[in-house]
Length: 130
Image (tube, rainbow, N blue to C red; front, side, top):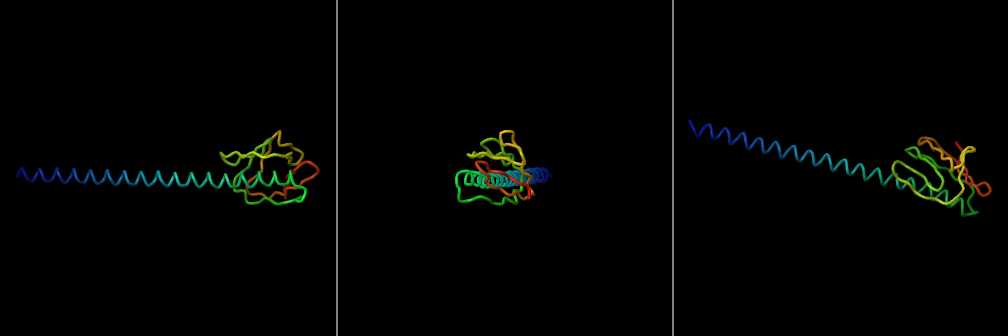
């Protein structure tokens, strides 16, 4: 009779240990998925930021190109004097940037789902809402 009670306690301890291992495994998997999603978001934001500032810099410094289109930004982009901000990523550019009469010195937003035409006009690079 005493052995029977001992076996039940051992089985319960084994079940508790297995459940603990299962919960720990699930927790680790969730954390890794969140890390992967965070890294993916950072990579996308960095790529979008680099594309925007390279377009601005190219138009500012090159007389060969005078117009381009930016579309599918996915996120809102903040253009400030000397930098573009996508999510938590900031990229630097060189140039004189304007949008509908607002200088980048004052800062302006590009809305993620809209299409923008970027033109070089004189020494300025101007964004126009299409």
